[in-house]
Length: 428
Image (cartoon, rainbow, N blue to C red; front, side, top):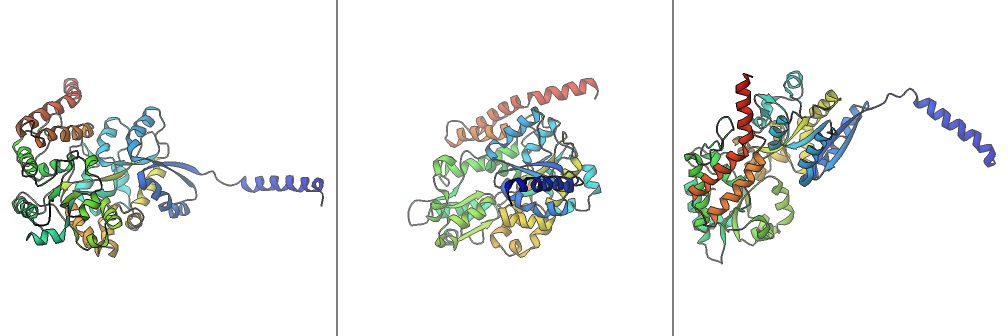
């Protein structure tokens, strides 16, 4: 058959194909922004949802964590926000202040999938601002202790200490062990989580009840800060920032330090990076408490799913949130990413229930607290570790550091006080 004879047949085929597709319903496009590794994993995780909902097209954009906050704010200003996104729990108050995210209380009340009682209470609270729900926890994060079981055993610290006093005594015995110079614990000086956790364990609120002023000089936080600085004063922890530490996994394997307060991302990292000899002597434990009320409180962290107010596809976006919240999907998410499930029932699966190193996280997640739910928290947290280093380095007393921190934070919160005064003056 010649090319000339083929042309009419090809033209007919194109017309026929167009006619066959003429009755196909257009898909509703839902844009989802995922952050970091999760943004890659969710693409695979959504395949069954796409099969369930052929009328929806889910477009996933993966955003690097380091650029995510700025990119989301830029998108909001430019009217280009996605329909839904993964956001860090501590960002939610800021997006609420910007009137950027949808309150989800009504949708939650009608949902047959999302059950509030099946979430860790402290993590759920990170999504509640002024009594309204603005996000659904997707995965959870908190801080516990990773430790060398052999070194603590040699120091007579078994079982793992449950009170601050016994923990401090254990640290001293670890440092006194023969076999070369080592530190008891690694507390990077450019991390704010540790002093905040110790403050929470003492009942410190960090800010006043209305969130308009700092409360770091309170007796509760002062006691916690004294404990934190004492660890450095006794040379139980090295005075090093994260960038100065080098390879934390190698140093842990070499026994340069015996304990490390860190989060669930390091479950996978330790298993991948530690040599077999160190894997055999690595354990985890919930945080000790100032008194006998074990475990001590820790941070309620992780990431949540939010629906943006500007979305014209809120119902479709909510369907995605519900799907990603199913316990079985949460479990598959854990298998793909290593992120701990937000749904309590997902922890009944043997993949987690039979994992002794994950068990400490489950115990700790039963006692977590949210950081103050104010838009300025990221700024406050950064200033906290900057000020704390003055005490660690011995250039200021603990009291001077906390007084200075209060002054700094009060400046950060000045606009919040101004808005509150305006609202009270208008009677609204």
